[in-house]
Length: 222
Image 1 (cartoon, rainbow, N blue to C red):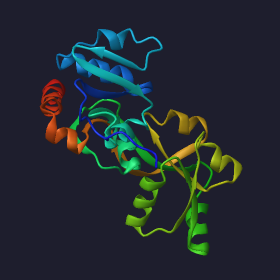
Image 2: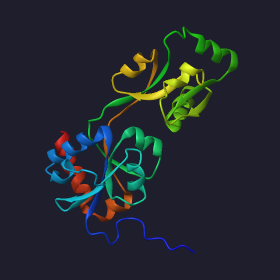
Image 3: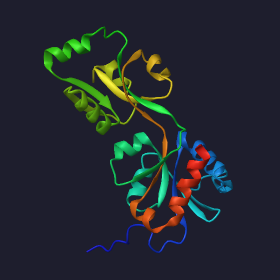
Image 4: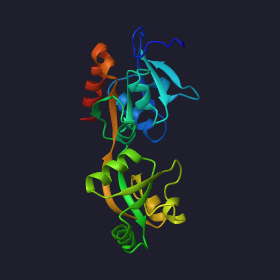
């Protein structure tokens, strides 16, 4: 039998906060600073993936991994996009909408489709949709009562209609520029996404610093 360490924050002195790399990183650091947290080590991160700053340990992870770290207790709390939170479908407590990193889930199809996708659906009773977000996509079309075959991709979703892999895509966009550049048009809005502060349920119950951070971040975004 392989012995595994206890999950969660038991025995850990410092509050551990997961911060996302990439597009949400600067907004996360700025919001923490606005809430009065010391962020010098985060601003000068270099190649480090974990830094201690102001009595808090920050771990810097890929955006999709933040919900996983928090849900499994490897971090007490963290900042993640609503898109990754919804798609992860893990046991998290969403505490604050941080109101940055705004984007939206949309359904898009080729600009020259001219109703052919809807006609195909009426004829075949199903359409093929490519996406990085199968849970979000399945829930959206199920709510509308539309039968879809979902193709999960990890790279450039825009390629799917161009190559005939799928008739439509579900992707996130901030401005729609990439869709337009690839001759795709938005046909439906799915949902909006912004950065959120999330907590591990056990850490929220046992570590007062989690609720304190939520309150301070909420005050900062107000």
